[in-house]
Image 1 (cartoon, rainbow over the protein chains, first blue to last red):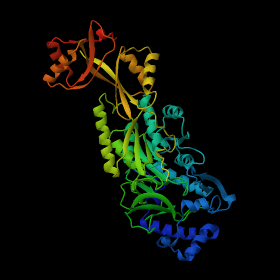
Image 2 (image 1 turned 180 degrees about the vertical axis):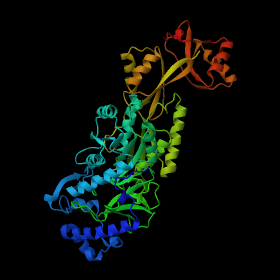
Image 3 (image 1 turned 135 degrees about the vertical axis):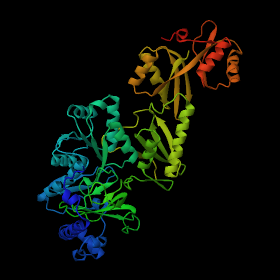
Image 4 (image 1 turned 180 degrees about the horizontal axis):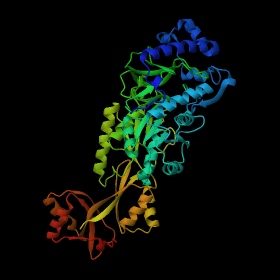
Length: 432
Length: 143
């Protein structure tokens, strides 16, 4: 039987949800206008005032925010509350030079942890569970978000943070972990280590909640099979709070967005037009309850589809499909859009391991793409012919999926670095 | 009749072969024969060792990828035409030879050809019927 953390809101009627969103949006826009000069200026430039926003049907009138805005406004430009009321910050990795700092009031932390708790309960979590949080703790939102959610559910929380696989496995077996939270690539690594050490019979895992990376349906099946668990997706971003913006239920066909806190829209990333339900496009979020960092119409760069089809779990919250990846992750090779998750799906379908790396280069003014895959005992043979045949089949399958030729290179096992946080899937050597 | 060959995956990079031979020599595994088949990106090191169980244990400990395959060690006279004679017998029976290499150090005026063939059992019977000697593990000092 499906269980809920906040059934009243998770299963609310559409009419009531719209009424709640209307009310919260009007208040939030007024709050931002009064407290965030950076956004007020944007509204003024567009000729919009809070009086123009009477409900969610007027959302389209508001200006967008992008990651560039967040960088321009660093650090305090988009702060929506007095600093004395803020209790915490989190920050994105800043590896692309675009560090983002988000502020949280105690109220923000509380609501965010509720969202994470909804995800844990949807994955079957109760106060009898042992929840091992193997997301990084610190500036990254993953660790503290799931930690707080786990507390709210009443799970015995193991605040492991990422890395130190030996210790992870020791606690997992000694303390009978039932729910693991980490990135999907680390889940693969844990599964591999459990297999190698013959610990499969010693683990009590029943579910995993995996996020912070784009991952394929094939990878889900692979992890579920290797660990004997149900693997649930979770979605979020530092800009809106962290994990728990959307979460998966028992149906595992997409993630329910916590619409009482976040209004979702899908836009065409080129024309910026709002697209009708069911269209694929860029996901845009408006935070309607956040105090510290109240972003309106924030462009996530995630490409996905929203659906309001009835869900068997009973939740009425809109569902988003697993994003193919951030448009930041999307590669353009020979003019073709390539998502690492597409390559991952082909690899797993063809019996290759999920640990891979994509190297893009430009040779004689032409793009090249090479997929490095580790050789495994399962696909190895004493016959060059058999291995070559498998490689050829993989190249054909990649070509069918991507529309371009990708070279496959088989490499020694364990030569592609295992990630303990977000995996480095792509090396782009092009100097454009 | 067949003896077992170990095939190791070698990524094409400097020191890859040395890595394997060092692992084996450090563990005192004698090699009876080796052969390499290569593509631009990787190679297959095929070998007959004096102690497969030990070889596999140490290769596994180093996370190398390998597989074991039965092969025939065919004794032939060390003289012109001897190999052709064997190949002709197999060709007449339409038995494919997938790959072949010769062994180090021969005895009794014989050389040994390591062959991976389509149907090892049939090949063994046919060759034996024609008086060709197929070596057994002890002939090659394989423990």
